[in-house]
Image (cartoon, rainbow, N blue to C red; front, side, top):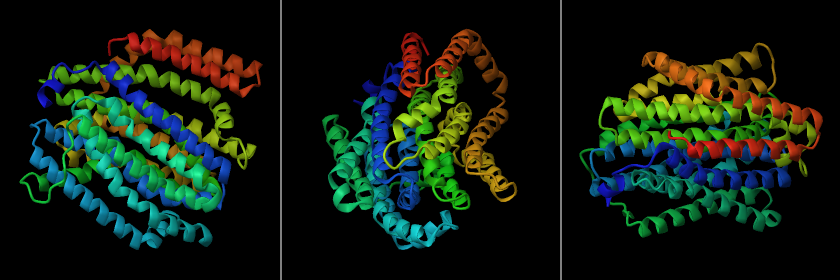
Amino acid sequence: MGRNSREGGKSFHRSLLEGGLGVLSSRVLGFVREFLTAYFFGASQATDAFFIAWKIPNLFRRVLGEGAFDRVLLAYLREGFNREFLQKVLFWSVFTSFLVAVFLAITAPFAVDLIYPNGAEEVKERAVSFLRIMVFYLPLITITSFFAALFQYFQRYLWSFLSQAVFNIGAISFLLLFEGALGIYALVWSIIFGGLLQVAYILILSKRLRILIPPKFGFHKKLVEYFRNLLPSFWSVGIGQISTLLEAFFASFAGAGTLSHLYYAFRLYYLPVSVVAIVGSRVNFSSLVRSKDKGEIFEHLKRAVEALIYLLVPITLITLVVGESAVKILYQHGAFSHADTQKVALYLKIYICGLLGFSLYQLLLNLYHLQKRFFTAFFLSLPLVVVEILVPLIGIFVFHTGGWVIALGTALGGWVGFLTLCGLNRLCPFLGKVFIGTTRREFVKWMATLGSLIFVKATVSWNLLHFSFAALWGLYYLYNFKKKSF
């Protein structure tokens, strides 16, 4: 099955559409979950406590589920499908994640104080109790990530990325059923219930696809090397998630509600990141694994860069114009006020300016992971982190700015990360030609998109119309993308 499944790989644009569909369904359901959170609890101390506690398990979810696990596993699967090795990887991965969860539960007060040092004591106490429950999501997402990586190995992108949609279905169902009885704790326990449903989905589907591999205790000669490479991969791939921990630290000095505003804005920003950038990077890496020579590798990279530029530039323009309208439609209900909307919209527009840079950074990381240079990728990700720390540090403590400077650090960090990898690999001339060529072909369309959206927003005050018109432009680009040969 392994060999036949890998021969004659799918085109990049088809694989991206397939994986993007799976992630998009997840994100739509994720917004339903966020809408219910905003509707039931608003932006308050209770939600601040939840978002602080959710930072840590959500970091593991994003990093393991969006690149760190599958890149290392695929790099080893390039050498052949070794069932015994995979069984032992699964056992030790789940066992280790359970130990990490126990450790975090014990040290929860220290963890909360570390990422939210200047917060109110009541908020931190709640966050500690929430974290001690939600950390046990870690073993669940580890199991899911392992089998999702196998799905990608066999090019089952849709089924791989749909697992997160199943998580959201479980979380939404639990929240709706138990919000009245449990209050904010319904939100906390919904994470565990969603994770259990996600594991059930991935195991049942794995059995149907005949790739259900049971864990097995024991040692393998490649295990030490595998886990040694997993740690730097966890860092380099998940570097974009470091901002979600840093924002909690800096938000504690920026006033009550800031963390919640940043969270809601980041959720909107992360929609194109996950649907286009993360999926595109992972599909590209799957293609690179099957590449036979350097020329084929650069051809795959060129197609991926063209595709991301084609999709992400109009997404950036659309968000800058109608981002506030989207926030009003999605969040401004119940306890969520107009003032909350203004702040979330501002943070969203700043985040989105770094979308293309961070996306291209993720693509260039693939070149290092393909060669198992995980430690090199780790060190080259440090400039991104430095920017994400220095910008809000200077902004908040020196110039006493608001929470917007935290979003600015994330946006600038993505571009710094990309330019660092681009320069060190001497790829800037190559990528510059790709960017100029794509811009020449699409510039008129981009300007038509921007001009028409500005006109509609200036003449009509109906937010739903702004959003609908932007969605039509999105469908237009998606339709044309489907016809292209990336």
